[in-house]
Length: 261
Ligand code: ATP
Image (tube, rainbow, N blue to C red):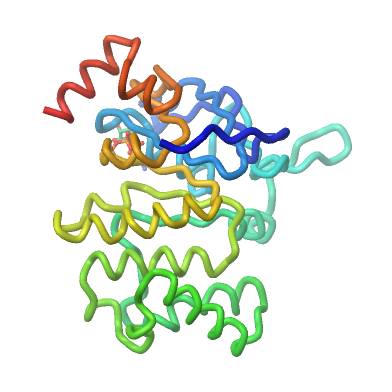
């Protein structure tokens, strides 16, 4: 387990976040502060709202009410005179560029090489010079143990390798925060370890990470805090020793009993 991180202003602040899809209320008032350098794992049963919450942090889903701040900046809205105005697409893109996201199904472009996948966004969105983008991409590929795959195409790689490329691609934007949405759940069991190992290294290097995961062992070992989502709310929040080792809520106990048996 990692030592608690203490800094002044949380890098992510969620305030009473609500989100519905039609009549289905998926988030029912989520409050969560995440400190710089902290790793927070979101656990809970299927449908509890974990992925939706993660996607709201990246503005892939719009919240209905409440507020989300990243680095002290309100997501998706701007104060203009005395009113809040919804941001334009370009402004949303700028905010999103600071938040890396790794998806369950990698989402790499299959017709581009690994290297092209990684340099595409820094060049297009951040106007990084191609030469610089390439050398950074090679450093990142080295970091995730895939320097020899730069010229391969994603379909030529295993799932674990593709997910490591996806992590390198997200890091290439130099994000302040990395969001992971069940990054190992589409992988064959023997490939899970290599992805968790890259994530472990990233956490050790001080990256702020929010991870939706069913890997309770990973949460126990790497997270500073664990949030148990239940029915669109955070039912329990604390250190892994508290939430996983000694859960207070009967709902958390029941969930852990099912996943750990
Ligand atoms: P899992 O572990 O299965 O991914 P989760 O806790 O991440 O579950 P969400 O994916 O956030 O849960 O889904 C919460 C609820 O919202 C579910 O009932 C889901 O069907 C619903 N939902 C999610 N996305 C949409 C959408 N785009 N349109 C309609 N309903 C949605």
